[in-house]
Image (cartoon, rainbow, N blue to C red; front, side, top):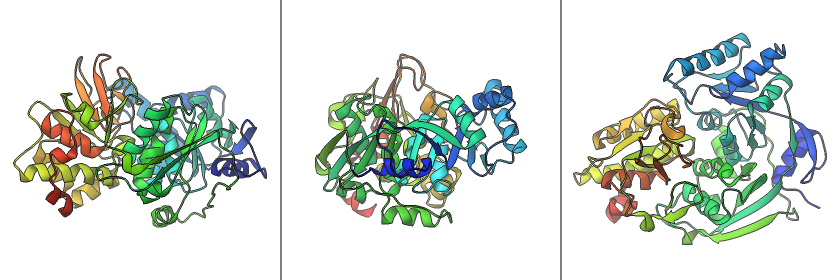
Length: 432
């Protein structure tokens, strides 16, 4: 019996020839990651057990990303605890505030490469599957163990396959692919499963859009999301890392829990209504919903391609004398310093500011209701982030709607959820 890409990665890291769903394994990791929210708990666990060393200072990443720049004394104390630990143990991959969000940073810096096994104390660690790694989120206790030993205990998951044929329409992005999947199977439809994505339409997507898809695997309950590496993946990685990589692909006779197939041409830009990522509707079905805030950023859609997409909509609006609606606040947060700098070079930051947006230093910010855009009672926000549970972006009685960057930009301009074609005319689309 053949193995899936997930089984092959786990088998190699467990020192076995083969593993199958349900097997309990101890596997060596290539990277352990934690942030300013989860690392302090892990650090305290290590200190309480008198574990004064780390397994490898070059295979640990600590990223200050969630409540930085520090919004209050507690967040400042948390960041200091992580900062002091990183300095004490000479952690190579320590990223200060302003460097960016971990799930954008680690692929961008070449710290994660195809074939890796990565565990992170953050649920959206599954992002790295977009370049062909097995990556999954764990708790602070597990990450403390991984930091100390370089190993993790896992139950091998079953795999589900999601195939997208054909070519997507304009304005349909990786965000819409994954919202479609979650809408079809539900928020627990892939519980403890490895979600494997393939097909012509997936191959047509850029690596950045693939990272968006795997980022939200956890929103369907997935243990991980993964896309087998191809030429685009290798091109993306080669200028970022000089590490030796190992490419894995699923065997033709590998067994799957289930297989789903769709034609990408049938997809429309989608919006997930409160209070579940699975509460999916088309933009047309959502156009009556007025908004108070629009947010473009997060580990899901804060990369340079996302900013370019939103920027194209704002540029088209500015040509017609339109800006962000006077009753709407639009917040743009690049996912990393590198993305911010590239956006500056391309003139995108000027476009956002001219259109009436607020642009912030790289941080998670309002995505988790942290700071820099928290919602008040009764307010509605359309967001490029990944979750819309009650209170996720602020008050429990606020509402968050999830969509791709072009939809969010168009909505910011019109003051209600809107299709980009309501702002960008055909001739503008040709130019951009």
